[in-house]
Image 1: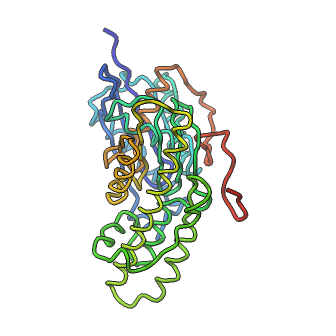
Image 2 (image 1 turned 90 degrees about the vertical axis):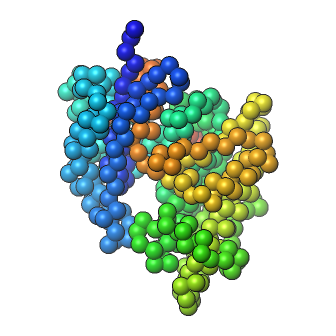
Length: 357
């Protein structure tokens, strides 16, 4: 019996140094043999955000150690690895280059194929690491750098239905947390603040809620938070503002997701409709509950990655690498990093002042 392929995946697009080994199996759901992630919270904490040069330096210091640890935990020998996959973009180019070059060197030294992976495609396919999922399905990708609704029609086949015209939702969470004095990375901690507050205390704007289809906008919401935060007089008011922000975001996604369902159904008339929510913000329980509610109303089945697979990780990169490996979609060793790599390459750019939606 032929041995099932094993893919070593590398992720260094921002501030996580991650390496994972994933093996194909007959169940249709790959087996994660190891998934090692080293975060850089302490490196960037004093700056209140990710400093690209410091992030790249940290990747350089850790990548070899993390790779060795992942291989050891997997129980796999180097000669058993079928291919190396690494994130090629989007992301910070100085960070992408570390993982990309390490992956190329490893593939070359082992004389095995190298596979460049779109970081967003990793998020898009991440539920396939624990759920048998057929194409097509609707994807909401919400993270620190991206907020998009996409029709996932197959490997490498994506149609963007809606996107943020300004800031990503994860960035809005982080900025709000910073204004409330929550230590970096504040986005994940903001939900805990929100549970202590009154979600109706502050009336916040919901930009382009009644126009632009399922496109999104969060800049106006951030501006409102900035204005209100300057006049907060107590800790309780901080909790109230956090709760109002969380509630407003949930309401925006509820309304916009309904519109995305309508758009998706125009070209997909399958009896069973699937809705995948992925990216770091998909770990937010309030958002999960609200999106599950709207999905039930509209007869969609909601699928979320496991919590530990919502943020940046290398298992999702290995997953895409495995899919590409089975189709012999390999890359040359001169493949460059691509910091602005989209999923739907035909979609027009929709950011900046004066954008018409």
